[in-house]
Image 1 (cartoon, rainbow, N blue to C red):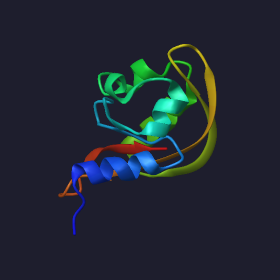
Image 2 (cartoon, rainbow, N blue to C red):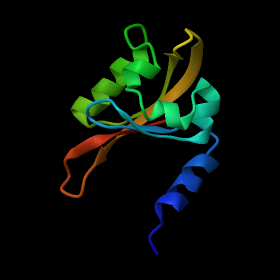
Image 3 (cartoon, helix red, strand yellow):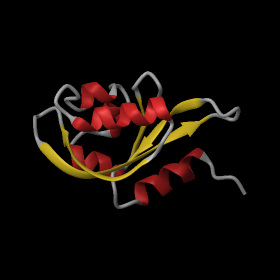
Length: 113
């Protein structure tokens, strides 16, 4: 049985780690409850932002790491780094990211936690 969009949302929100998905143009396409808690940004607001608008990517190593995943298609696991939020807070994270592909195998974005 396939999950409905609401069931997928509940699965993501039940996770104890922050999870977001990002489109190839760097817009945020999902943002779970723990990501909201971690950043202090609501899902509604996050979905209106690009990854670079949500996090200070010019000084945030995670942007470089995620760009590598987006271009190479190679996942990363347990990379210790800092997210820098819009208030300038440094949030230590263990970054995991993997490419998301569409039905034909083309890159459709990435998932990061």
